Image (cartoon, rainbow, N blue to C red; front, side, top):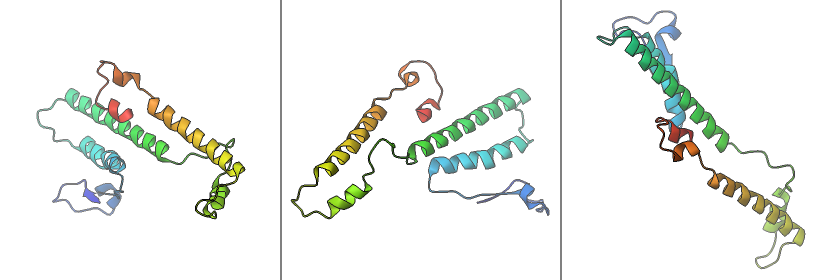
Length: 156
């Protein structure tokens, strides 16, 4: 995308980076919106001088809210990235990649070796416990009746 942050009648100067904002959107909507808010909208509204009858105090309050929202959105993106990234396998768990190759080579009704079954069972139990812990997690701020703001569900 390209966005001019100068009036339409004004020519772009030699310092094009000052007059034109450029960027790229990705497939992730939340990340793209976060980038657009931080790199386009916030600079444009802070540079705007024609706010009409809006007082400086109201303008500062608005900037503060937009800035807090942008920071919350950045936190959400970081949280999503962290949760979506593949965590390194627990070093205490057996490496099952070689075991999966052994199973793939078995005939349809042939039983895998006991050692292979034990390793796969251990890893599956670990994954099950991790999934249960994640699903059982509760955010007490979302369960209370306090006004925690519009970004609480995003944080959760």
